[in-house]
Amino acid sequence: MPPRAIRSVAVLASVLALSGCSAAGGAPAVPIFGSFFPAWIICAVGGIILAVIIRALLIALRIDEHLPAPPLVYLCLAISCGIGFWMIWSGAA
Image (tube, rainbow, N blue to C red):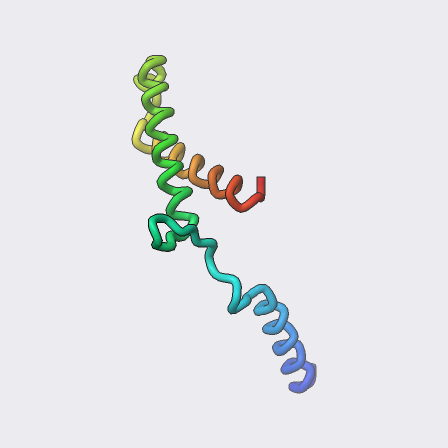
């Protein structure tokens, strides 16, 4: 390939790679008590709260004592709930 063709392909690839970036985009923020918080923080806290509620339910149903690695299970549960909140929030679900 001639150097000019390589340069053209490189420019085209960089333009296509950067086309999704926008200066006006930014992370979604939510005003709470006059301060803007990123939406992912709210979803993470919601995921943790929901995981604590599910943990209490599993303890009440005596399922907790049968879990192989409870800290890992609850960590994955909190992450999954947070991602679920984010998908609902962003309209992906």
